[in-house]
Structures are given as structure tokens and as C-alpha cells.
Length: 409
Ligand code: UTP
Image (cartoon, rainbow, N blue to C red; front, side, top):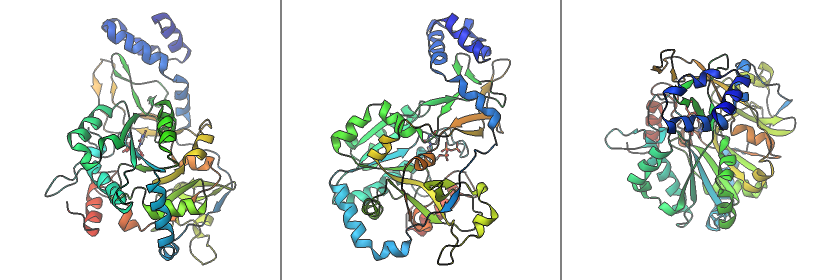
């Protein structure tokens, strides 16, 4: 794209300020900016007017979870089927590590955060140690670990993991890929600049993982290795069990397109997304979308009918995902703190949210599929998310839960 074309594109979307410092840039910076203008989807910014407005939703109905009691009863059946599936090389794992971790407030990728007290215990280390537990259960079969990063944290993530020898995981079983970025804007949809020659961007949400894998040519690897199931999980849950054999076995045996790990809610209005059916298809209803009637609804055993929250650990059938890969997912407009250049060209790191980012979420992929098994896990043993430095879902609460599970920090 040349300068004239860039001007025309920017004018069309009312974003002419992007070229404010163009004349001050070096030739290379000019080329980079023109390329970025060419690649940026400015039309997305229109959506910031929908901030806070909820999408029209369909008709919700409960979706029964497979409960711990049943899983315990059928343990051997599930475990053996899961081990067999893993040993056959049919399971891959995808670590979602493209997020910015703004709430945690560290400049480094979240996985580099050290939660240790008497020694180093990095979040990435905890994740890989957990994955190694599965490898052991599967008789030493290594699961291919795909790690999604973003343009903002890719290089540092790779060098950190290399430096630490992948915490004992074989290098040839680790593949990195980058997710796409989306522009970030103020509340009026005016794109922010993060440098004189750089439009402000942020990762386009954790649903970007599958499209980005396809774009990176990784489906060839998936097909070549015969991977049929992909366990997708968040970087920030330090008790995350990855591709655990019982979960894999139950999902395979039930013949569903996906399995979703869920935990029993600790209060009817707990702030977690709840597994349900929406217009007859699996879906996740956000806690603020639950009506009083839904919170009061009971299942046939008299237990709350909307009682199982998702923890961002899903086992997807890869063929089922490929079949829906072209479907458009809803766009979520999220209010965030976005560093920006002020009028005088100084970079400001805001203390409070100052604009919108645009994300597609992995939970919306579930609704595109025909079936999903909510699979209950014990919260205290498998769910210790780190979102904040202190308080709820924090480094502090995760440390407590690690202690409870005998993990030395
Ligand atoms: P969160 O939604 O908690 O976002 O991500 P975050 O970026 O880590 O943290 P905040 O909201 O800025 O504080 C849940 C999981 O999804 C991944 C994160 O890395 C985390 O594992 N994620 C999120 C991505 O991989 N890409 C994204 O674009 C967003």
C-alpha cells in the first residue's frame, strides 16, 4: 500500500490521525506503518458503540453435567480409554498464552510470573509439570504442546522457555504460533497509536487459536501426526490438569464434539460462565445473563439446574472444529487500559480503562458445535486461576490452593 492509498483508507474510516507523525518516521518505519494500515481492519472499531450492550441470546435450557460421583464410578473405563487415545498419539494440547494479563499488571507474559516463595515456581513451569503428570500416566507418551503467543509476547515467551529448557519437556514436542491482533480504540472508535509509527493493537481474543493454527499451516502437522483431539487451556490456572486421561476417555466414550471441564458453582450468582443449552445447542451463559428464574431452577435431583461453571479447559474434536472454522463468532467489546500517544506524542500508560479492545472468545466456539459434555472436576484440585495480584483469583489465592494440593512453592 502506498501513502495515497493509506490516506484514502484512513479517510474512509475517519482515522486520518494515524499519519500525524508520518513525516518524522524513517523510511523503514514508514513502510511498516503503511503495511499495518493495509492489514488493519478499521471497520471493527465501529463496534465500540456497542460497549456494554448485550447480544440478543436464544432460549436457555439446562445441560446436565457428568458429575464427579459418576466419573469416580466409571474411573477405570474412562482412564483406560483416555490412556489408549493418548498413546495412539491422538491428543494434542494448546496453551493459550497470547493474552496481555493486564489485570496482573506485570510487563512480562503471565506464564513468566514467579509464584514461588522459597524457590522459583513460574506459571509456565507449573503448567508443564502438570502436563508431565499426564505423560507419566500415559506410559511416557509425550503430547504435542502448541503454544499460542501474540506479536507482543512471542519472542520473550520463546526465549524464556528455551532458557529454562522447556522445564523438562522435549523441544521437538513444542510448537509456537502467533495469534492475530486487532486494533484498540478510544470510546469513540478512534484508533489509538502506541508509537509515532505504530497503531495500537491487542491480541484478538482466545478464540483466535484455531484460525491462527490453520493460518500457520499447523493443520498439516495435526493431520500428519494423527491428532484427533485438542485440549485447549488457559495459561493462568496453575492447577490445570492437561489432557488428563479420564477427561479424554469420557469425552471420547460419550461421542461428543467437545468436552468442557466445569466446577460446581459456590453461589447461584458466582461470576463464572455457566454451561447450558441455547436454542438446543451447547452454550455458555454469562453470570450477569442469568435471570432469577434460572438461578432458582432445579434439576430432577433438586440441585440447581445452572450449576456448573466453565474453567477454560476444553477438549475439542479437531474434525468438528475444522467443519465450523469458517463460521463467524460474536465479537466481544471489552473495556481495557490501553497505552497511547497523547497530543504531544508522549506515551501514556493509563491507570484506568480508557477504551475498547475487540475479542472473540473460545467459549463461543462451543455454541457452534452440536454437542458438548460438561465434565465436573473438583474446584480445589483443578482450579486456581491467577488474574489479579491480590484478592479473588490472585497470586495469593493460587498459592493457598497449591499448598492445599501439596505443591511446594
Ligand atoms: P483472560 O481473558 O484472563 O485475559 O485470558 P488476559 O489477557 O490473560 O488477562 P487480562 O484480562 O488482560 O487481565 C484467559 C486466557 O486466554 C488467553 C490468556 O493468555 C489466558 O490464558 N488469551 C486471552 C489469549 O491467548 N489471547 C487473547 O487474545 C486473550
